[in-house]
Image (cartoon, rainbow, N blue to C red):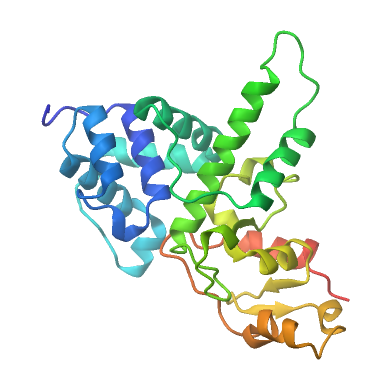
Length: 271
């Protein structure tokens, strides 16, 4: 292993990818993924773990909570943080692709749900213009769409410790990385973890259709339309029992307040 060598831009983008997708408590050097990536980079697991903790110290959410991580963040670290978080669509896909190239295999920290697989196919179908002969092939677009969806899902679920933020449901196959801003209308925010909530499938469908939303304090609000079906035992268990309660807030990448306001104004069914 080579010690003390400067971190390249490529390596910092990989580190940002890992920081986004690993729960805060899994940034340690004993994490098998950190060990594998470090070996491929010719670095020690401790070196990579320290770099992830340095990146954590730059996270505004952790700074606001008084969690500082390590204090050795460099100018290059700050530039990498700012570059990545200003270009989620570009670097989410690029870093995910680079990670797979480095390891030689897919890194599936959490399996995609059936509905997310369907969403990925639909996204490819509606968001890309007809392919010109000189442009990328449909296969390339499909791969990039899958990589982007994978990055977003893993980042959102990691932030919420793989639990529905409303009900606490912990079954990965039942969890969705739900977009706050409609993913078809805001492509620049499609891979931004702060545009995501970890929701169980029923809650995701309700949020997507505007049957529920969150207020300024991230408390659950039910739409008048949903209330028309009350009383109902199923709706009580899935929604009414949680009305007015704050969601379980994530360890990082909290839902963006402006995105939530847009959801309340443009998606939520007020009547």
